[in-house]
Image (tube, rainbow, N blue to C red):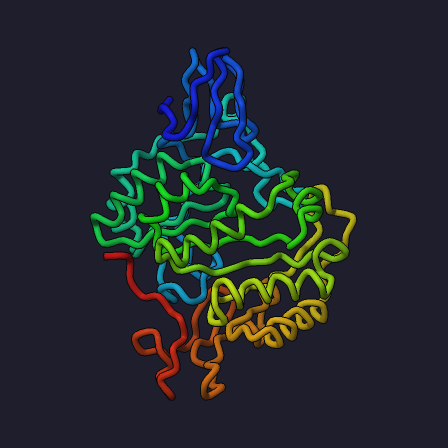
Length: 342
């Protein structure tokens, strides 16, 4: 076990975790909501430091990140646990797991080995993904430092449910912050993810970009009857445009029935195309349709000359007409990040 970075000791022997806005108060011998933080003898320990259950080499487009080192490969890491309980989680077998009961799935991978494995795998960076990396804070911090020391980029694929002080610890060591925005109203998040306060998610995304210089991209899995109404989609688009900027990519991905939402239908393509229309009406220059292979809205079109500058087929890039993050035809800024932080 590894002692946590952010927690308070209480006079009653309980501890208060300060990594995510749940601020779990954990009794002796018990776990927090994420099932990875344990109170042992009045101290808060992480049960997943240096422990992985999923390791893969992925194209960066799979995260999805379309404007961050396009065409590169990243070493993708996952462990157990999450601070949300999403009804439609695609990785529920690990995200909803208990680090004590399901720890047999875990293997050791010390942070100092990440650069070596990345190099051997022809990866240009490392992504903490598959489950929520916020609860992996201490390991992600040490791993990100090791990656930057060896010229590798770093990525958080996150639900964004993180405290300001935890973000202050990890964000200076992140190059990309790919965050899910599941809805706009608290009741949507309460239904989907069993959390009540959504403001920390939006504030963290804004801080990641403006305070810490992370490249930010937004994903919304558009779910029929849950978050596919015009008001929700327009509010998200307007927030992105106002708070993050019109060049911030927004990925509108198709939902497929799964887990507790198996009774719903897959998102109609027409619904996604309507969301794309809303994105453009709100001024967003880079909105994408995901999980619909072959759809033209998975390509990057220059907002200046309207030419396709990155042509994609799923996660593969067929052609890229980009020079130093700008359109090769007209010079328009495409908001494409090409290197890790110095």
